[in-house]
Image (cartoon, rainbow, N blue to C red; front, side):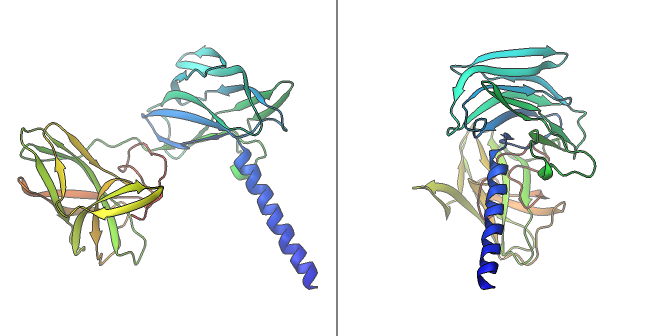
Length: 310
């Protein structure tokens, strides 16, 4: 009986591995979401050939809702486009040789139409050819069928709401744009704050601290890579903003760490706060709280996800 149970567990594990491998084998978009009205770089990842054969051609159909499509040439490949009313409607790279055990990317620059409906998904049918063999990644979900249920799904791009106009605050020669916080799960004691600062004056200034009502401390931190490891350190002297320069605080880099939170940061909330500068002094600002997984200002086009704690 125990042997049967062990075999059952092993079979389930093998099935999960096969399903996972098949999912990874699909032709996918590197960045699967973009805001309406935003520019978009579609990077199609091709992780394998056709049943062991090398890829020799890749054809991408540009869907409605995407305009101004322009392909990036690839050395060793012939590029062909079919023109539509709003840029290329079909793009083909052919004549190359991408072995089954190698990986490559095919890139198209485009723009998401302003009229694209937030929350909807547009699909890029892709046909991958390997000599006389083909794999058509063209299946699109229909009512009652999930994308994960499809065997040969077309790469999909989820449309986000159009980017909101920047929110700007001024303090002397400093211009502070779109302060925002990332939502925190219940019980979290730290949260991240982000914004950009432009110094339009002739003298340097320095961001030395920040505050919101339910945090005991707002300190300036830097996150960076060190020998392949992500490390974080506090900047005790703050962050310098030199004349004529813009300093961006964003996930994965400079940021404000709000410590000892007494309540969670909830998506959609707008929180009054202050920033403290060495010369400009204290400046009143408002922080909008974005989603827990956001890596860019709320409403802006999403960036590839990076792993970090806040």
